[in-house]
Length: 70
Picture (cartoon, rainbow, N blue to C red):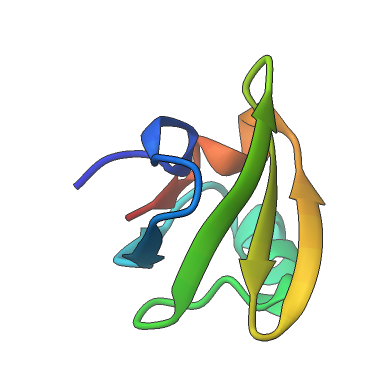
């Protein structure tokens, strides 16, 4: 298990756990980051990532991406 920030670009990953406080987890779940779902990193710039999750493209900060375990 590793944070989303370490995932390779273009590789589909299974979300294993979403960390952080309750407010952060709720925010990420509303964006589609739920355990068991898939996420694909489209691009990465200095730790910030653009990902495909649930047929949507979402930009996630380095801090938020580090709370998503794949």
